[in-house]
Amino acid sequence: MNPERIVAGLDIGSAKTTAIIAEVEGDLPKHPTIKILGVGQARTTGMRRGVVSDIEETTRSIRKAMQDAERMAGAQVQEVYAGIAGEHVQAMTSKGIVAVSHDEINKSDVDRANEVARAQAIPQDRELLHAIPQEYSVDKDHGIRDPIGMSGTRLETEMYLVTIGSSPAVNLRKSVERAGYKVRELVLEPLASALAVLTEDEKELGVALVEMGAGTTDLAVFHEGKIRHLGTVAFGGNNVTSDIVHGLGVTQADAERLKERYGCAYEPLVDPSDVIQLPSTVAQGDRQIPRELLAHIIHQRMDEIFDLVQRDISAAGFAGRLSAGIVLAGGAAAMQGAAELASDVFGTGVRVGIPSENIGGLIDSVEAPRFATVTGLAQYGANRVALGSVTNARRIPMGGGMERIVAKIKFWLQDFF
Image 1: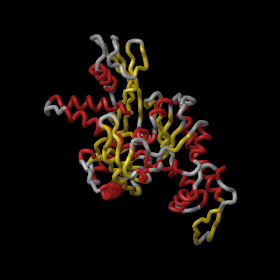
Image 2 (image 1 turned 90 degrees about the vertical axis):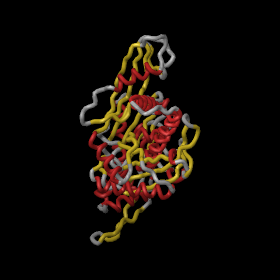
Image 3 (image 1 turned 90 degrees about the horizontal axis):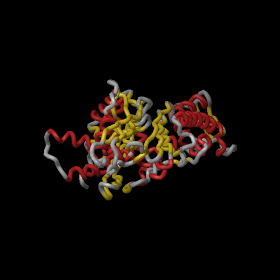
Image 4 (image 1 turned 180 degrees about the vertical axis):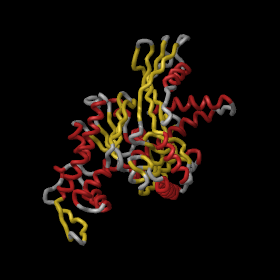
């Protein structure tokens, strides 16, 4: 096992923290694949809606998930690629325009245009997470993917800038560091999931990735191969659980169990004669309810969540433009009936996304929609390692120029979204 080629992904969710350790394989630098060596999970209580609310608790769950993954992999890691998401995430499009002085556009012109687009003033309380070039225009020609080698006098780049709140980022890094690891990079969760579950064709045709977590539901819209829109709805699986608590008068833990064992998100799928035994309490004795009642409660809330996502997609101008439909990921997507209900609400094809693109090793341990983010984080890390293998080939003497080159590489990297 080559330690240079080991990557770790860490997804700190509102219900569970999941860690994955993988080895980078495949044909580098173009098509890295990951071989999954270890997976670890721990319950989280220190996160609310994707933001750290209790550092001690979060640290404890990170330590447990990471140690389980390390034990399974038989390898120790120092650094992790950690996911971040939530309502504090914001995105905007920025333009960069430069004059081209020679016959044809070269890499340095593209880099300059990208630098201009990237040099947006970011408010004090925010930090830039990703700068993703979307497309270029040369003189009057728009929608160019790669302008290198074209002739023109004016090059314009359109860049998608994703920023996050500084304090959520600081607290997330702090929790990881206290658990004994270093954050190699923070990665936006829906983008990581997209690496794991979306195909190139889907991104080209237009697709919305709807990631249903416990605390929030995140949305990423891709069209013509690039990320076009990000959104967050402040409801998730936890809201479904608390509706069951109120609707059936059961404890939080029992509601979670009922949801996992008998839950169904689409009422018509339930057999009207199905009956569920509820946990008995001293006050209420033995109770039975039709399974339809449980499904009704879940259906209502999930319907509302999908409806809010649909509105967000329409407001962003993508209603009717997603030819590849909707891909559901995240823990709540595994529930029976989730795809049927989503298909009803969105009026388009829906599939449940399970990590399958470019992975090997212990595949069966990540074959569920809740592993989309963490698998994608490891794949993001693999892409970084693969690109690193190119840059390591021509080592530059450390000195003044080093930093600048790193910045350029970082830049060009954003191409794989």
